[in-house]
Length: 265
Image 1 (cartoon, rainbow, N blue to C red):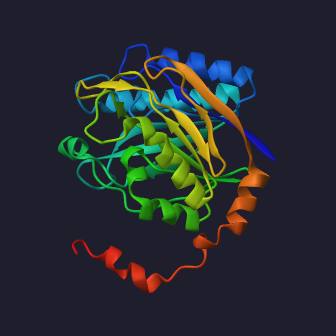
Image 2 (cartoon, rainbow, N blue to C red):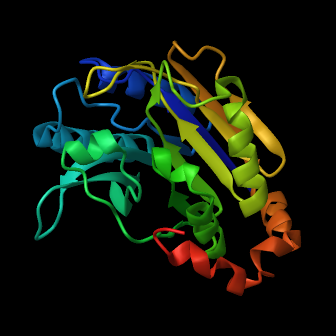
Image 3 (tube, rainbow, N blue to C red):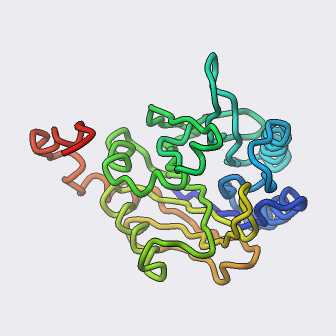
């Protein structure tokens, strides 16, 4: 069984972000791509949280998935139900219907200052015969949380990101190795999608989109400052075989992990 997937490296934070995204998705649809992921906050221009833009974004995602008969995933800021603040949540649509919503588990300091709250549940969304999940941007930096998704049966993991042009983190040129490691350890494919442009707070961003699997980096951007569609074919049978032989998913000495539940050591 094969599945064609793509990271949509569209313009971010621009009045033409919708246009950029749809153009790339159409080009992917024409090549037989079935699953598309857009960058985190791709539609939000500088100025902070904009719930009107959220409504427009969700309708845009729904319409694209309906028009092209495919899976389209993208982030929108939504109000916390019966509470204060917002969630930065990935919304997954298939053929015009919502199939899943995953809240970001680890908002950044800047997001928290904007009122973004933490999600608290790792979710699996079964679409067709495939188990989808999400690691929203910084969530991928937490290996223990990545493992939870694997234990729950994730096969294709969406990773929408904001990749700032200049980062304080080291080894930028080797960052793709982290994605291969997460895929190898957890026996799932990761679709990472970022885009060139600007964040809600005015920081410059770049793409650095890629798709990783237990076999390596399946596809990667050619120019971090340009619009492009990063896509490939995933062999699900091979992916599931890797899961069967990856004994670290099932054989664990859980007593040694009890300290992870403590806030401080």
